[in-house]
Image 1 (cartoon, rainbow, N blue to C red):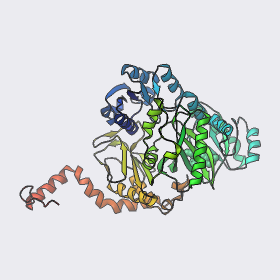
Image 2: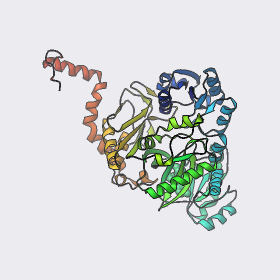
Image 3: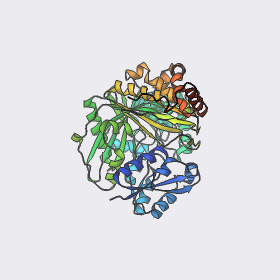
Image 4: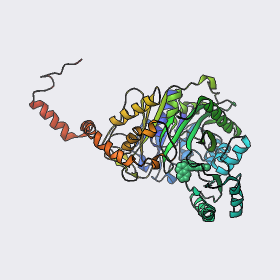
Amino acid sequence: MIKKVLIANRGEIAVRVIRSCRELGIRTVAVFSEADRSSQHVRYADEAFFIGPSPSNESYLVIDKILETAKISKCDAIHPGYGFLSENAEFSDRCKKDGVIFIGPHSHAISTMGDKITARETMIKAGVPVVPGSNACVSDSDQAKNLITEVGYPVIIKPSGGGGGIGMTIVKKETELDEALESTCKIAAKTFGISDVYIEKYLPNPRHIEFQILSDSHGNAIHLGERECSIQRRHQKLIEESPSPVITPELRSRMGETAIKAGRWVNYEGAGTIEFLYSNGNFYFLEANTRVQVEHPVTEMVYGIDIVKEQISIASGNPLSFKQDDVRARGWAIECRINAEDPLNRFVPSPGKLSGYRSPGGIGVRIDSSVYTRYTIPPIYDPMISKLIAWGRDRDGAIQRMRRALYEYIILGVKTNIPFHKAVMENERFISGELTTHFIENETSLLEDMKRIIERDKPMEERLSQIFDEKKRIAAIAAAVVAGHLPGKNPPQSE
Ligand code: MV4
């Protein structure tokens, strides 16, 4: 039985984890850096411990400090959230050594999936389809040329130590190959400390489709369908949905079974994600993420399952309480990541103080966030303000609800990407479900669409913003007094 959990993270995911703990009657311990003294996760946890300066390599990434805090506060488990130490094999091991439960898989699964060449080799052995390409590290030009004779140009060179797209190079013809190999290795060494790279056939317009799996320590495993995450910018996902518009029930069970097979091969325990590239009806293993993901709420909305609770239950040693046939998808969910950034100016970050904040609500709307009015978004971490999730009975219903929720959302004091999300929710190709990983660069009208939408929605934004404008509020009250609409004197008729 887990009685007390340390959350080795910050922001919305820390709040998200504490919420599930609270529902389970588990006590919680937050940790925070200098920049996070006034953070909501610090107030919301039962206890909070200061762990160091703002840079994460002096606080959230320091294994010794996290473990020491767990010991002092008598926690029996640690939830790593996403990012930070969540996919650090050493951390998983150190927890075990210290007798603290790591809420996540064992270090072998993390390190196998963390090294992308090893992950590829392992998946080939497991019989999981991968994009045609190299079976090991590509160390010289001749080896690369031999391989490309088989798969043909274009190819993509990927760093083994990376993932998520960082440092990848597309090569269209042989004359570009040598230089691309050299520069990719160099970047790989500098960014990830490992110069190993591998080569895959480059798929020109793939969709990014990932499967959520849950595996317990008794050999039971299920999948919770897919998430379509094709709408990304510079390898940052911006909009995710479940299910995907292109996945048929037949394909879902085939890909789901493949995802489960991938997990089983590494004795996966916990919640995990198997990412695929999908192109022309074919799917190929891309990467595996051994943590809870930012976009997990769309799956929760559709399957009615609390993924964080399942993580905790699995880490406690319980068998999964349901089988594949027990889980049922219902409706459609879309998530928009609301960031403090300027969509009219190349999405540059816009951290700062929120002079006003009011999030949407109502039927089918979920907000995962840790901000509040007068909170300052620190410039040192990623500038996510919240995740807005809308559920509908079908895709159109989810889109309509997302538009409505975005229309209600008031964030003052910083620039946000809400106009971008509004533009996508009205985009013809998005509405018809025609998505690829190149959606944003292909939709050249988005910038003009955003400008038009900003003008169009200004009146409502101004009305809703009045609640934060002290002068306007006082003026409105004064006008009401003059007009004789005084509270008590001339009471409005209530319904
Ligand atoms: C690919 C690909 C095409 N073919 N792999 C991997 C991580 C994801 N975030 C981007 N990745 C890609 N992997 C094969 N075999 C296309 C992408 C990709 C991409 C790659 C480099 C630069 C920008 C990109 C934008 C979208 C998708």
